[in-house]
Image (cartoon, rainbow, N blue to C red):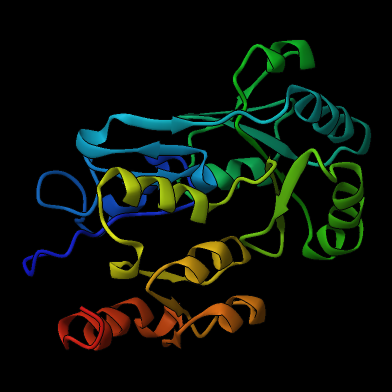
Amino acid sequence: MKMGVQVIIATGKTRPAALAALETVGLTGKGGVLSHTSPGVFLQGLQVYGKQGTILHSQLLDPKVVSETFKFSMEHQVPLVGFSADKCVTLFAHTWIDKLHEVYYEPQAEVMKSIDQIMEVKVQKVLFYDLAERVANFLRPHWSLVARGRATIVQALPDMLEILPIGASKGAGVQMLVDHMEVPIEQVMAIGDGENDIEMLSMVGWGVAMANATERTKAVADAVTSSNNEDGVAKAIQNFILSGVFY
């Protein structure tokens, strides 16, 4: 940052979750990486904040898809959370839904009384949370078929399945933000490890995948750094920014 490089968070998380996570390592507030007045891409590109932290883009999931997913959640008793800007909603309490708050810093999900009440909330994406095996063998095949042409299916982690508005991605949010900031995409480096990072790593000037990234993510990257347990992000910044190789 002292070199004049703008550091921006692009995440599937809500902004409050990203702030809470970064606060633990002293990277929030004035002079930090993220604050309420800084740009950022959240909720897989569905909530984008521009200069001075003002809302640049906010996109909603098809209400019919929202209704169908929550009906499915109740029928199969699969934990499901709806995300709306800085708020999370669900239809029933579950230890895994608590984990989203306790481990992943997301706002504590508010338990709504009915699907009708859920529909009053402007849901931007939904997230199923289940065993990785069930996600791979049941949830993903089912929703890839049912939501085809109506929504985008993506996974950041093996035990989570997210359903977004059709065509939405973290990459689309990043593109919108860099256009707003008038920064050529060729001058952007991005680092990621999940399936939800593929579009972003593909479009920037220098895409870096973590060693723990999915194989599909590594395949589109320009370089692969160490894993998240081996300071891979720090090494990428050192090797490609501070050394002057990319910047």
